[in-house]
Image 1 (spheres, rainbow, N blue to C red):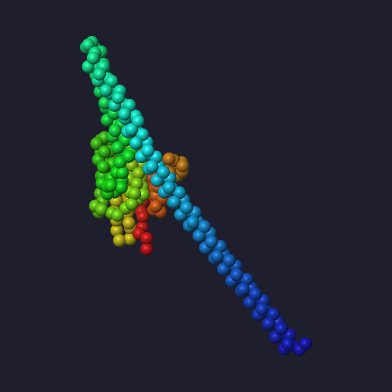
Image 2: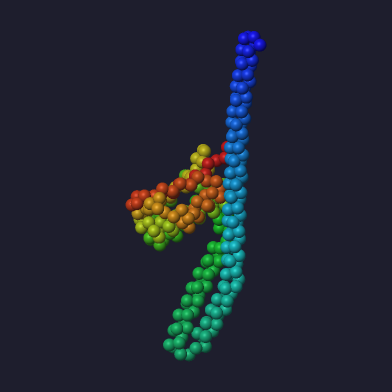
Length: 261
């Protein structure tokens, strides 16, 4: 074999080897890309499944609450009404003044309990969330809390009406309630500030901030019931969840749901 032929053979071998290396590199890159896309698809499907599961749990919870409310009204309420009538009859027939006073006290307690039971039953069975705007629901919660005079709550919003379904309104209301309750119980706050706004790119953005003592998030149990509830509710609708807090600097909650393109 001449030198020219040997040189050509070497060049061809190197060319084929280089092409082989390039082909293997392209194959590995494509394999990794397909694997990444596959894992992203699996993660997305799992996330969608998790949202659907949480939404189903929320619907089941709502149905259970309505069933409990009806049971309270139809069963316990009727029994308390019957007891109230018996007590009223005892009061009418009794002739001993000392006993009459005690019977009257019992009657008042029963009637107050019956009134509280009816109010609770109505809260559980009434389709309050579907019938009212989200700003009305939050404002009612703010007014009820302010009446206790434990912490001053200020609520601001840049809209009056927003087309939200039951799940979205329920998530916003329950998260707001959870934050307010946690702040009053643990933060020693004097003020809570709530804003709910919408914009061109954002369907809604909820910000809640208290001026309490705060806490170190690094040393907070990740499975705390209150925090877990808020995170899970935000996850139901695919909203971004952010909670910041520092000792003696209060706590800030931001939940944002962007409009779908």
